[in-house]
Amino acid sequence: MSASTPLPAAQRPETEIIIADTGELFQQCVDVRLKVFSDEQGFPEDTELDQYDAPGRSVHFLLRLVPSHTPIGTIRMVRRPRKLGRLAVLSEYRKYKFGAALVLRSHEWVLAEDPSTGGDSPYDVVAHAQLYVKPFYAKFGYVEEGPEFDEDGAPHQKMVAHLKQ
View 1 (cartoon, rainbow, N blue to C red):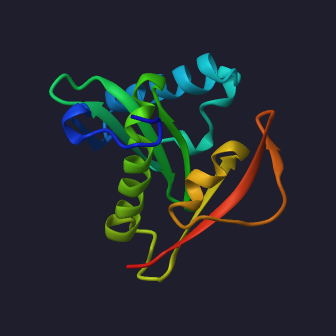
View 2: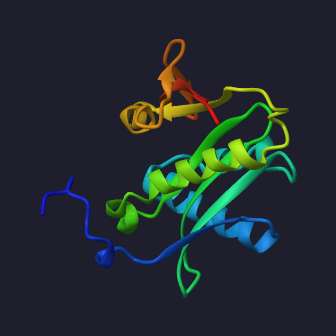
């Protein structure tokens, strides 16, 4: 089976995506982010947490194995301005394409539950994508906007998705 061939569902570990609505669950999100961005990719730990991690500023989604509840992935949706980011999946689970599930779950939340939408459509979501993941975000309707820029020492591209009900 090639790397791009999806694995049969029976070979994928069972998971769930929940909202990290307690301090303990939020810390599990942070731990996954630190493993991916600091330990694996070399970003400084002090850049991982920012003003958008303050209570009430964002919704954090946690991907975890079932039934063990082992955290394996996370994504953050900043409420205002609406910005998707901090998508991280532990390396040994990336082959299962769980990043896509996290993006889709965060989009579902924006369309169904984000109180900042105010009924406006389309619902714009911004992502600052590292250059190598631009094609990934494009699969979900994100389009490049503006020039490339440096964020935390790595080249990024602003990308915007116009979600519709």
